[in-house]
Length: 250
Image 1 (tube, rainbow, N blue to C red):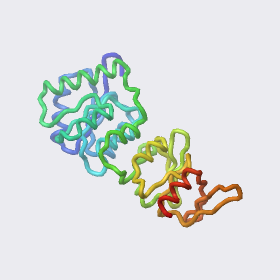
Image 2: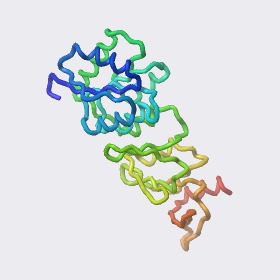
Image 3: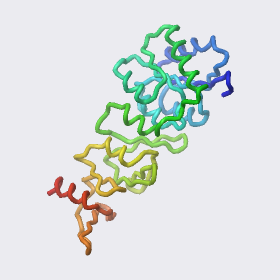
Image 4: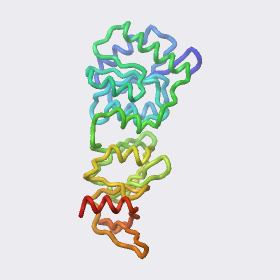
């Protein structure tokens, strides 16, 4: 992007909706449409490869919704959500969207949103908190039903039933499954707040344990405790973690 030019990505599972945005942008020679995407997977791939300045993004799409798309993008473009559902408006702004257009919208309303998005780009105000934590604040699905991870342009869904444990790795979490591990840019505390406390317990400052993976606790020589998992993995248990485990499992 130069001072007077912008790149844009249009994401909507409805062809007519993408066409309407494209039509409104035709009167703006300063904006180059890099790609149009019909689903969230295409959007993540295109945005990761091309890093658009502006993102016109639907919310309710098959497989990967708009909030999950935004969660996986770093850096985050100046985003205008476009949707037929008004119940997501507050969540969209919590996710630092520039504007929220409710279908059907007028050309004047689109121009207003576009002006805001371009101004945000020019002001260099696209530095926001980590995408995963933005999405956690914006989504209304609690507890979390799945974890979405991006590796380059590849998107992976991790079923919570497949998790052996979760470990903190600085500003990332390492998600351990049977035979594989995945890194996700998110703090352990943020992820902990999204999980069902009846199923997942933070047993140590660096570890979250799915309770159904625990087989027994072993006591060390210095009154320390170790959690033994079904696959034989041993995890440290802090004093507070042990107290919470005792309370939950007796």
